[in-house]
Length: 187
Image (cartoon, rainbow, N blue to C red; front, side):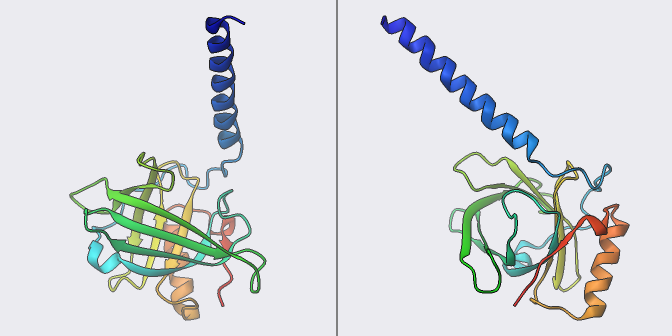
């Protein structure tokens, strides 16, 4: 086989593989639950936002499918980037713990409410918008511009019923279908 033919075949296979990955990722995206995603409601003080968060609810997605006891931990790195460690348990409460590590950068310096996140190397492709948060950073609602992803976070694994209801009311006020969210079981 000629070298040029082998290169052509290899190139074709690579293009087909990339196309297949693209089509798979498009086909497995969650449906839109907010067609008019709002801009973040207020600025974020990153030093107060850092630390451990517990996921109260989320719009189910392929990379968290079936996980419970989900947490997210954020820490400032020496280079100014933010370390992101997400973890959750399959087959809760006794299942295996899954951990994903990534990094984030601030995408909107004026408010620090919009970040870009990467779990797959140097390309920061995931949008992470802090749509709203409590005055004391006791809760946070996180989304992104497509309206397909949403996370409801709390500093407590099991917040009071009154706080949980207030946060879910805020989710609705932001234009999301709260009934499309999966409640995350926490230990």
